[in-house]
Length: 433
Image (cartoon, rainbow, N blue to C red; front, top):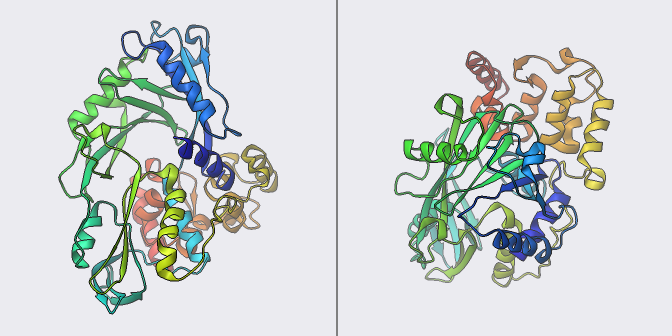
């Protein structure tokens, strides 16, 4: 827990544009967890980590606060604490961009079709899934961070897996905006799980998540009716005005590849990571990553290098604590001030557009907007604040190759862009490739 809390503070400093503090409200419910236990848990949360940017927790009288306005009158009190929200699509691409700028070769849409141990080194065979082109990569070590496919890759490399995975599906609902404010709610469920409601993309509320054992294709998880009903039922235990199926604007699901610690219930399986260093027959090292979560992803990477440094014959020291992700070098990590200055720099552009781009790209917003004085300087407008200038930037610098890449894997503008504009966007992307 200490490590995770310390990482929150560190990530706030190096990526303030995509990771930001958020107030979470925890309504108290009689008959679930005792009040003293919740307070004790929050006390530990406040004091176990090096808290600098995140506010301390506190009790809140919901009946007398705007924080209680969306809730049933019976929800009279509770607690609030500070945590972080991250734009996961941006976090992924910015880490790839950071690696590329430090010398890495990033191959998107490329599958590993096999790996062979040849005299203590790896020969890795890859295939471009668009063109079919084959490629061979040779390496002294192989880092197997294949997620749900980690043991499958080991099998292809001729290495016996040392551990099992537990695949768990987590699903989310995207609903119409259910309440005003920039705070989130953490809601206790009778099954002793918690479900959150988070403001999402200005016009929506994100609700999640579930923990369901998964046995299908890890690349094709889909929310079930049971998961949908579970999430709706949970939030309706708290909402003054119940939500229904008609309020759903979208959903998404993912598969967590958890290290199988032998727990019977999916929600009890550890979310911590486990690193396993093995060697193939002639000594080629392979490091496999089991489990893990966003909060401690840089700690995981540092730990991986600690294990691999001897095999690489190198000395290594941690350096990521103060090194910002691309666009994260915001002065003082003060995003409100940076957004205000960005609006002053581009006064002829819609304030909402400038703010969204500042949050997505940080200091690299200048590479998107350049010297634009008004909207026509940004080229074609596809809708939902997406312009030709941003589309070009994403294709040229962030490996976007399709409309879906832009609308869902680099942004979440697919929620707002009219379906009629998607084909036009795809045509425009194709012209740049």
